[in-house]
Image (cartoon, rainbow over all chains, first blue to last red; front, side):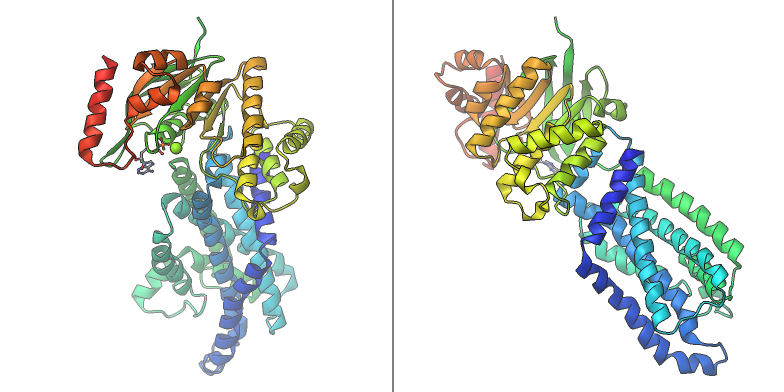
Length: 248
Length: 265
Ligand SMILES: Nc1ncnc2c1ncn2[C@@H]1O[C@H](COP(=O)(O)OP(=O)(O)O)[C@@H](O)[C@H]1O
Ligand SMILES: [Mg+2]
C-alpha cells in the first residue's frame, strides 16, 4: 500500500512543480469555451437547442480530463526514456501496485486540472442547474479520469518510444474527443455517427456531466455511470496486463 | 560448499537477429564478489537485465537465490538491489525525495530510512543538496546519488553495472570501500560489471571475461594472468579480447571468436 501511495504522491508532486504547464494546458479548453461558446452560440440558440455555453461547458470539462489523464499515462514513455521506470520495475513491489499508484496519480492530477476548468467555466458564465447535483458531477469527472488514465497507462506500456505518440494522438485521442458529443448533442444523429458515438466511452462521461450539471441527458445518468465503471474496470485490467509485460 | 546465489545456464538473449548474450553459463557463490569484464557491447548489461527481471531470456535458465526471476519475479526482486549503468533517477524530484521513494519501494522502515539517507548522502557529499531537484545536478552528482540510493537497503545480492562510470576518484574509493564492507560484514553477494581492469583486479574474487556475448575466460585475476601468460590483468584482457576497437568488420569479429574458442579448449 505504501508503494501505491508514494507513487501516487510522486505524480502530484510532479504536477504541482510544473506551473507553466498547468497554465499552458488551460489555454486550449479556454479557447474552445470562448470561441465556440460565443461563436456558435447564436446558431445553436436559433436552432432552439438552448444556451450553447451551458451545453459545451461539460464537454470542455470532459475534454480537459481526457487529455490530462491520457497524457499522464503516456508520461510513462518519458520515464522509460529518462530511466526512472527501471527503478520501479525492479523494486520488490508487485507491478500491479506500481501500475495502480501511477494510474491513480494520473487520474487525480486530471481531476485537479478538470476542477480548474470547472472554475474557469463558472467564471465565463456557466451555471449548474442544481447545486445539490454538483458533487455527482465530480463523481463523473473522477470516472472519466480513471477510464482514460488507465487507457493512457495501457498505451504508455505498449509504446517503445515517442514515435507512436503522434499516431495515438491523431487516431485515438482526438477522435475520442470529437466523437463524444462534447461539442454537439447526441440526439437525431445520422445512424453511423450515432453508433460510433455510442461506442465512445467519453460520450457517457460527458453525458453524465450534463445530466448532473445542466439536467440534460441522452443515455440517462445511471446508464452513464454503469458504462463508465465497466469500461474503467476493463481498461484497468488491460493497463495492468500491458504494464506487467514491459521489458526494458 | 556455499550455495549458489546466482546460477546461469546456457543463457541466450537475442534482439531480433542480434545475439547479445550467446550461451553464457556461470555460478556465483554466496558472499562472493564476481565481475564481468568486457568491452562495450559485450552483453554485460543484457545479462544483468535478464537476471533482474527486466528482460526475458530467449533460452537457458537463470536462478537468483534458488528462485527463477522469470516465473517468480516478485520473490526474486526481494533478493537483490541494483545500481544501473544508465540513469534511473526521477529528475523532477529532489535528491532526498529520490532516496525516500527508493526506501519506501524497498520497505525500509521510516526511521532507518531517514538515518541511512542522511549517512549515505553525507558520505557521498550530497547532504547539502538534498532539497535540490535532481535536474539541476551535475553528471557526477547524479551518479553519486544513484550509488547512495543503491546502498539504502541491504540486499542479498547487489548488482553494480559499471558503477564507477562518471565517478570522481574519491567517490570511487568510497564506493569500493562500502562494497567490500557490505561483502565482509553482511556477506552480500556482489555481481559487478566493468571495463576497468584495475577495479576488477582490486575488488573481485573471480572474474569472467566476456566478449561478443560469450564468456571467453573465467577465474581469479591470478588465474587469468597465468592462462594468458601475461603480467597484468590488462595484458590478459587484451590477449583474450584482441586489441581492436569495437565495431570492427565481421571478419575480424569472427577471428576473435575463433581465438576465444581456441582458448576455451
Ligand atoms: N533493447 C535492445 N535492442 C536491441 N539491441 C540491444 C538492446 N540492448 C542491447 N542491445 C545490443 O546488445 C549488445 C550487448 O549490449 P549490452 O548488454 O548493453 O553490452 P555491455 O553492457 O556489455 O556494453 C549490443 O550490441 C547492444 O547494441
Ligand atoms: Mg553495459
